Image 1 (cartoon, helix red, strand yellow):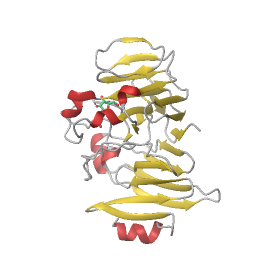
Image 2: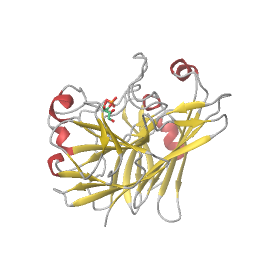
Image 3: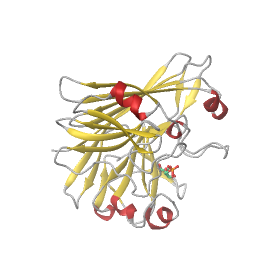
Length: 297
Ligand code: TA6
């Protein structure tokens, strides 16, 4: 739907507007007493969440590509109905819903001053060519003192389905070398680079490419941004696994949408159900995966 029509139907004066940030690429700008935010209709991808008086909590690459079929490098891409690479290399990594325009279904300014935005996506011929199942997805984004995102997945197929998924959050940090991720103690860890498996203990710190999956990890996580002297708190809902990633120098330099050195200002701490934390849905059954992100006072 053209941004002019979206603007007409969903704008809320002083709070929500819809503009194209690239041809045919509408983005919602949300503003309220707590924060400002940006959400792309493509992929229903949150691109920015900036609490009043603070720097953005999310990171987006300055070299990001805003085009249909390509997930923006940054913000919170939605990985569904599978996380990671697919056994069939013709199927895109991290599923296909981050490569599609979703339907914007509602914008609402709540009485508590927060703003709620909802999106919808269901199967069609293209999705069924990649994953032969009927499904419905509803994404609810609440912008207030914190950012709260809930992905509700509904099995509208006639048989059971198995999915893995993640809210692939890219966070902004002052310097990755002075950043720690806390709250993953005791999780079963898989190192995606070495395939080593071990029980994790202590804080996660970074001095090289880092790509690890943490299973049986349902608790709160904290990103200690020491150079900015702030802590980002991540509260998960319906999530049994997390993924922590920083591509570091070489991997990021091989990615066309990553500027040189930009890896130092970001870290992914992803909220999901991945690898063996598979979600099985009977016909008609639903599951909600959510995350609540905010600054510790
Ligand atoms: O979440 C970590 C990861 O799986 C990394 O291995 C890396 O591939 C990253 O996701 C980004 O994937 P993308 O397909 O968005 O380039």
